[in-house]
Image (cartoon, rainbow, N blue to C red; front, top):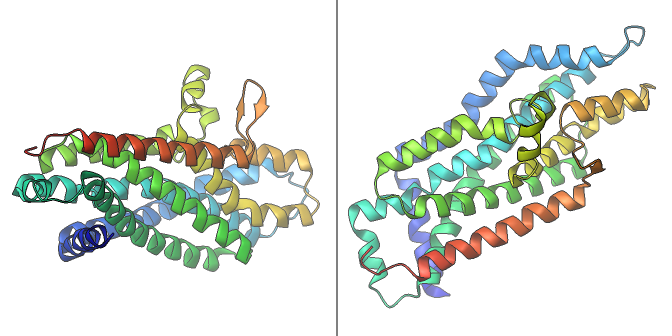
Length: 298
């Protein structure tokens, strides 16, 4: 345990000592928040208004809260994955510098070494994502605040799970990479494509039927749906108080992928949690096994 703690501390210290790597990760949610609020805010607002009957007078505060909730969910569902790939860059940097060879030939168990990289990446990533959550909550407060303590707690749990998923996935993907260029290329692909395939940028319902079926088999889709559910539940409850029909509420939730269906059966939040947790465990086991069977000189 002492070796694990020391290696984890070392990895976290190295990550935060590299100002370029850290601030690159930290600035990601800031840039996304500015871009989303500037270019997508109006589109999201028009989309919500299209569901609400014109004769009903709904305050802008509720609509703006819905918009900020969707921005929050889109930003964090992507950030949890993309930042994980950046923070896991340390694994490759150690290979480039030769540090990994020195660590691998030491009497330290390979499982301890692999878990120390994973844990350090998780701690670094979760710090950045919590900063992103704080920025999003501040933005939401300026637009219209309806969140309760329970809503915030659910969002925190969602972020922790998605960060674990992102770190376990990036650990496996980065395992065979040996240069910073390779990691940058993978990071670019993930940053550009992940937001679409998980439903963060565009609702899954806007894709073709075939692509929808494929996306519903991707674990990240359910992590995104959980964040969406918990980020807009409070303003939706306000709409209910204003006597908005249930069918309108359901249409809004369906348009945002809050309600997902496989073969006509709705996937509950408990099932979504189960899918994410099982996926994290499986990916983590694969990552540990990869490290256990690799050669010491790699």
